[in-house]
Length: 112
Length: 209
Image (cartoon, rainbow over all chains, first blue to last red; front, side, top):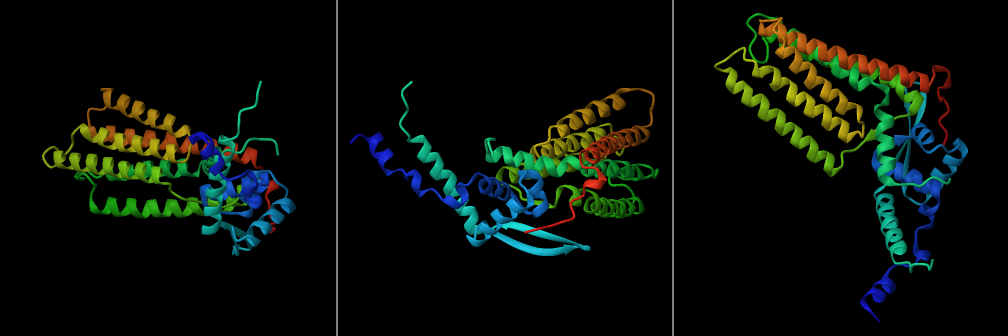
């Protein structure tokens, strides 16, 4: 087995990729929360272009997995939902990106 | 969802969204206009006399509080609230910026111990201001700040070179005032565009999770 083949063999298979983050909408939410310290629901709604229900259900799923921390507070009389990526979520996101990079980089080239 | 998701692209979009309301430009503009007070007293030293310095400090705090309040009333209900973090690269940029400011201010302070009103003062003011503006633009992925930095340098140099005002203090007041007004107007233009993009009627009141 050549060195290149061994490296390809050691790389994580695509099936090991975190399926919670793999969903495009959730990946986008995680990406936005990854680049900022915290954001509220409205900011994510505006930036991701998702509907309220959709965003809400994805956030619920991410919270259940322990990737996102959701806190509710009042800004004057208006309720505000603050969202923050947990340490676990940040690590999982970084791991997902690395896994995907490796998995895609080691794919054999298709013939033209 | 067919668009490609790139983290650096997401970062620049998130940061651009934060600074699109123009309040930061307005704040810097108003601070520059307020800085005039320091140059007005006749016997003012490098940092101005005590009264003008205290007044300037209080003015800066008041302006920041007012603009923060406006941001909470205008920006947050429209695009949402976001708290940014400084990456390692940004932190380096801030450290370099502080070093440059300290170096220039300290250097000029040493010069002015002997020469109270020296033309170097204009550039001691312009260079850190332009570098700061550029650094802010780099951190927040906003190219408009690079343009503003160039305007600062060009405008400052032009006023410095024209022989209309022989009095150095008048030149300093003119430079500070012009830069402040230009920056404030840029902020107002941005805010108008922001309000056109997000009209008052389309406020998001519901906050669901």
